Length: 349
Image 1: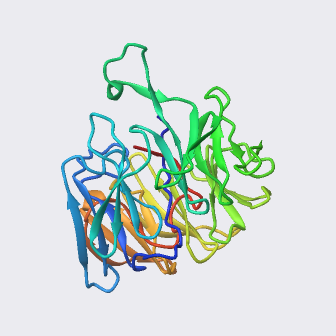
Image 2: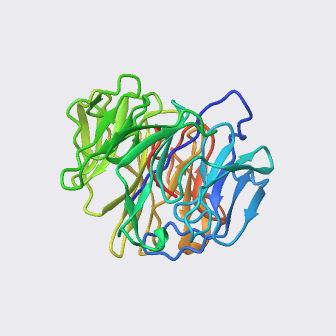
């Protein structure tokens, strides 16, 4: 299945919304690409900034496996089930307890992406690697059959052929047709026409700033920052691996992490497109890469797995301001979109 770095965030809704200080996390999940995950559930924490910590958890061996638990909309959470066999993900609602709402309308093993704008899942079901394969779980790959469906299972339809990448910020499905020539295309569900993500864009699926004026993507050359019309603003180069990028939910401010082999590991903030990145935090050979913004854009939560802690940093000044024991991996601060794909990006169930 498609390897992923990015996650979809939450959308605004008219029903219950989690408090702005709610952080979703997956228990036992590693955020180190060379780490060892033993997922055993998920939880929601509040009060991490004020120090009045409160957690609500659902624990089960293997629950929230693969890429962990993810916010959808209106306090809903999609959670992968233990495998084998490959089964539909589960849906929960946080409000303020965790209520099981049934299964998501997605075939087990699908690559999927949620669009806050369209309130739709896009998904690509798996297919077995061999014709007479006894277990789909033992070997599967993308089927190239992309469909969309609402969270309640209604309005399901197949829309195109290719491998799913995610969504654009304006609600188009992004995919590529062949691995040999993996150029992203965007499908407009109203006209069923396809075109580039933005004019001239031929690199990976970008992430959009909250006001949709800018977009950014990690490429072999560095972090590319461009205007919404595709005009390039800058390329931020690094001699280290670029691990993760994340726009602030309230400003055109971009955070990104780098990983050296074996050191250093760094967190930078770009205060404005075209500006100079500012080093916010660094360690030696102790790995980290996962970062998520607070909804007000003041704080960054850094998952320091190998120090067994979460670290809170003020985005406008260097140095850790507060630490707390690590509750889980892939923390996601809710609930305006604050993470790695404002339009929704591919997940594997």
